[in-house]
Length: 194
Image (tube, rainbow, N blue to C red; front, side, top):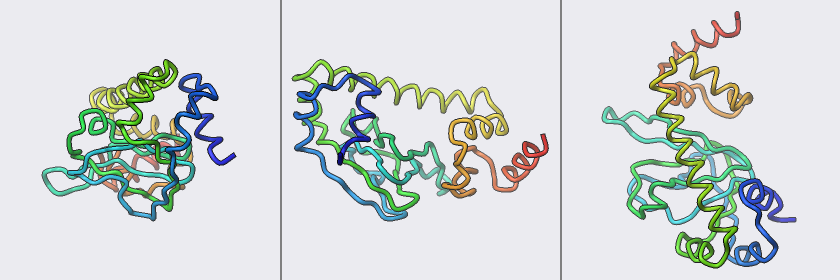
C-alpha cells in the first residue's frame, strides 16, 4: 500500500479509523527533495507537516556569527515540521534542509488539519500528541545543553541513532553537539577506547 508507513505512524500515535483515514487520504501528496534542497527556509511560514518515507533532514538556524547550528535531525518514518511556525503561522527563524535525496508525504494544509480536528476525536488526539512530542523534543534539547557535557550528549545521540555516522556528516554532528570538529574526534577516540 502506498501510504502503509504513514498509517502505521499515525496508529502509533493515535487510533486512526478507516473513516478518519478517508478524510485525509485525498489531500495527501508525495514530494521529492534533492540533497541540500530546503524543505523550509527562514522567513517562510510552515503550512504543512511532512512524513519522511525515505531520507533525512536537518533542522538548523544561523547564529550571530553566520554559522549554521543544527538543532535536530529527522530520519525515515518520522514527521518533519517546524512546529512553532506551523502553530503560530509566523515566519520561521529556522531552516529544514534535506541531507540526502528524500521522499516526503505531505499532509494537508494547516487549515485542513484543523478542520479534521473538529470532525474526529482521533485526529484531535493525534494533534495533541504531536504537539506534546514536539514540546518534549525541544525541552530535551535544552536540557541536554544545561545538564550534559559534550561527551554525554554524544553518547545520548548514539543511543538514539546508532547509525548516525553513516548518514550525517561529522560537520553536522559537531554542530548538533555544540563542539568543534577536533573536539568531536577526541570524544570519539575516548569512547572507542572505553
